[in-house]
Amino acid sequence: MIRVIMGWIFIFVAIFVFVLRYVIAAMIMSGAQGWNSVIYDDILSYTGKPLFISTIVFLIIGIILVCKEWIYNQFIDINHKWNEYESEANLNSDLSEESKTKPE
Image 1 (cartoon, helix red, strand yellow):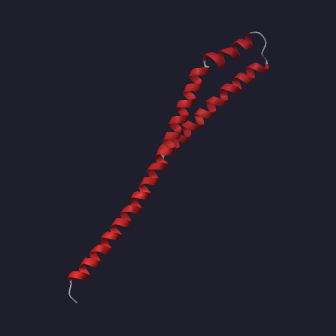
Image 2: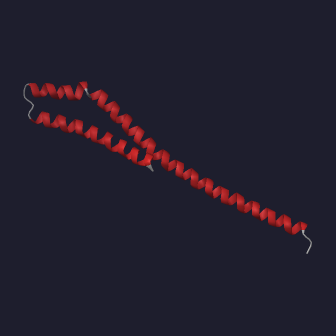
Image 3: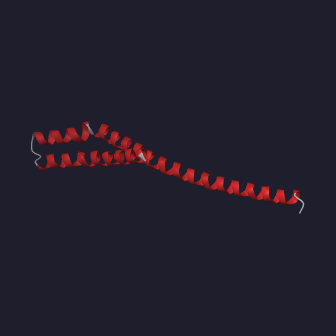
């Protein structure tokens, strides 16, 4: 459960950073005259690649954490059902063998 929560946190942080970058750039561009446009270029060009890469990495880590827990739970459920099926099959075969060997 903690992995799922951490995964969702990673996903929300990635989305927040991605959106925040453009919000800050849009706020700066709303008054883009002179040095403001230089700051805008700084935000989108120089910090663009590291922010974009870190956002993608955070998103991938979050998706892996969430999906890993979900897939793990699916396998546990399948394994549990398989064990029930095997135990029922073994019980049926034991009963049929006992009825063959025991005289009435």
